[in-house]
Image 1 (cartoon, rainbow, N blue to C red):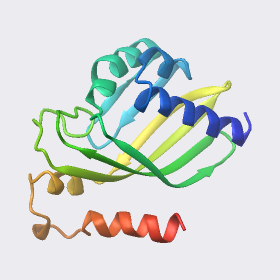
Image 2: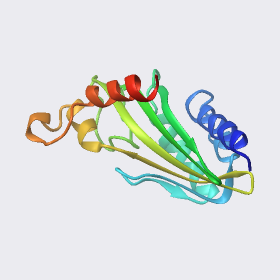
Image 3: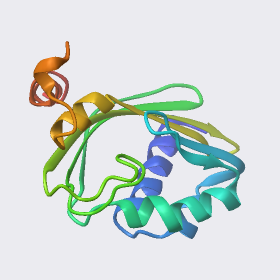
Image 4: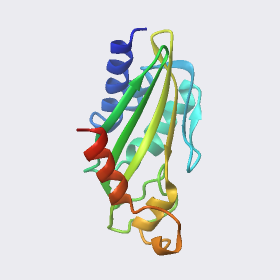
Length: 166
């Protein structure tokens, strides 16, 4: 699979998740034994049937209405794609893949994340999504940022927008 096809398939997959919001279409881009895992919360699964249920019952309904995804950078190799993304949303509903079990806080959350996607047989084999959960928890008020040795999320997203995206 060439790099342009991998990018096109990834963009189609994310459109099925975030724009069209169709679980069947999302898993149509994947191999039978595909896996998806949001590592900070261990939300996801393996196998096309399990992933169809996950997308239909957990992930897609858990995406707040006005969520935006902004690609900061993308690298594509022989059978993989790595994308840095800034996801922004109003935490106006439960978001089980990001903040499992937490009722809406009404706060805006901005999450710099990295998706590592592997491809096989012209389809997606796996997705591994990583983000700094401590910065998410500070944004919704569960922990105090001044108690942690970490950068403010606005500094991280400003860096991505100013240095990487320019």
